[in-house]
Each structure stands twice: as structure tokens, then as C-alpha cells.
Image (cartoon, rainbow, N blue to C red):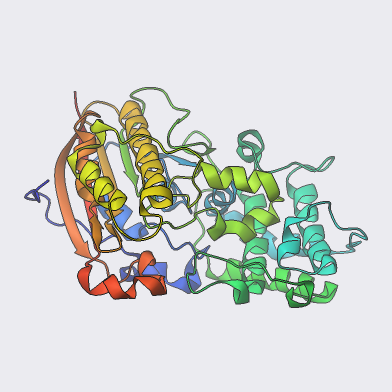
Length: 436
């Protein structure tokens, strides 16, 4: 698709580093993906919706779209398949009225703790922590659950029903524990910051005392209290904000029920979005087969099935040309693993865009932030591919703006450096309108 002339005064660059409010120290969670709150604000002003409008983000992540839309007075729906990100997004809705209660509550959670004498069977935190240290962190997590989630019995936070019940206040304390475990495992983060390694032997695992674990948790609660911009509303209005554990390929929404979509589909850079939150999922007791299942389900997963899907004509000529070039590339595994991986990505992307079209009202806008990528020297023009996919999905391209991206996650791969001179990374903001 050729670049379309823009009647709008300006389409804002979506990058977070250009928004002063998105400074690393003020962000709830170090989520590498997504766009800034300033971009969402600008986009909402551009598309000029009524205050009764419903805004959807099918890949909600840490919740930038939903929190910004909510604060601007709209009804917001966020969908994500990763339970950890549902908690992060929900934690952003803690009320200002709760600020003075946060530190006292954190002391209530850890006071008179009787640490578990035996580790949980298949404890996922034991990937990085000694048995004793994992027990310490698990006891804090259990106390959060019993204090703020379900007093009588432990409530597993790995399904839609339990996450629906979870309050922003409970999510806040889970977020504090997320941040503690993330800091403690920082030395295991690989050169690619979205990938965390597992120590080869027990001697390399992290060691904690009970005093250290409690101190780190209490300090993190204070840090979040002091740095976080709290939403002014006194209640988590479930009529105006809904955060759903659901797949973008199968949204639990009625047909033509959404007034606008603002989102960023997972980039086709083989970022493993489950491994990127491996530690946080471990805090939620998600490991083993449950983790593997989640990993396989996410768009952009680096895992592939045993059989390769078909290249569909409705994906467009650009997608077919890219996949054929990839399949015929002489490098190792191009026609096997890498072809399967990319076909899987485009299959998921197309299904998700189809769902987005289904839930949009006629004439409603859909705004996507996408980034091109490369397989070796072969350009994967995601913006053009999505525009061609939209032709069979009742989505009409209306506006576009391209921005040079100073870095791409795929370029963190040292083996890619010989191709970098042939690459230019472009981040595109694409506007569509649902056909009548």
C-alpha cells in the first residue's frame, strides 16, 4: 500500500521514550512492547469519539490503552492471554484513596510469617532460587492471596474466572512481588532482554534470607507508592473497565460492540512473549506444562507445531512472496522451522484481525502500531501485509504514518549483525475504518 495523505494535523510517534511520563522509573512494569500513553491520548483526540464509546485493545499487555482511555472518560476493554499481564494492567487502577493503606497492608501481609517448611511440588520459582529462597517468596505470595484474594482457600490466578474477581489492590501487591523477583533474577537475563536463562546447577541459584525477602517486598511497595501515578477514581468501575483473559483470535465480545480499537499486534521478531514474563508467571505458580501450553498459544511464539500450516491466499501477495523467499533461502532450517514459525504467526495474526473486524461497529476506526522485521536480508513488511489482509476483512485503510525505529529487538541477535547494513526498521501507525 502506498503511503496515504494525512488529513490529520499529526499522527504521534508511538515510542515510549518520547513521552516523559513513560520514564523507566515511573513505569509499573518494565514491559518492552507497546506504545506510550501520549500516543493513545493523541489518537483518541484524533478519532473524535463520543464519551459513550467503547475502546478495545485485543493485545492489552501492561494496559496503556485501557488505562488511558479510562482516564479520558471512555469505557475500555483489554484482552490478553497472559495472566501476568492481566495483573499488571489491573494494578494500574489502584485508587488514590488507597495510597495511605498500601504500606500498612504490606506489613500486615508479612507480619508473623511462618515460612513453609517444605517446597511446593514442581515449584516454578526453583528455576532461579534455592529451595529455601523459593519457599520464602512463595510464602509472601500465599499471604497476598489469603489476605486480599481468597481468605479461606488459595485461589489460583491462572484462569479467566479468578482473574475477573481480582481487585486492583490485590494486583498491586502481586505487582510488587513481580518486581522483587524480576530484580533478583536480573543476572539471568540474556543479551536479548526478553529472554531469561535458568541456572545450570543449584550453586548458581539465588539465596535469600527471610529478613531479606520481607525487606525487599516492603521496600518495593513503598517505591511503587511513591512513583506510581494513581487513578483518581475511588472505585474500579467494572462497567467502564474490563480486563479479560482471552485470546485475540476468539474475543468474548458481541458482534459490532466496539467503537474503536487501538492496539499493537505482537511483532514478528521471534520475541517469546511467555518467556519474557517467565518469572512473573512463576510467581503465579504457572510452570511446567501449563507454561508450555501458554507459550504455544501466544501470537509470535518461537515454538512451532509438528506440522506446518498452509500459506493462505487471503493473506495477500506480499505475505506469499515473503514466505516463498524465506522457504527458498539457503540458510539452515529456512524451509522447516523458520517457515513453520512464520506461517504460524501470520495464521494467528489473520485470525485476530478477523476477530477485531467482527467486534467493530460499522465505520469504527481501528489503529494498529506495527513494525517491519527481517528474515536474514529478506524484508518482512508487516504494514503492507496487514493492509493486504484487511482487504478481505472489511477493514479499509485510511491513514498511515511511518517512523524510523532506532532499534529492533531482532537486531539484539549477534548473528544478525552481518545483515544490519541491509536493514531499515520502520514503525508504522495504520488507521483503518470498518466497512458499512
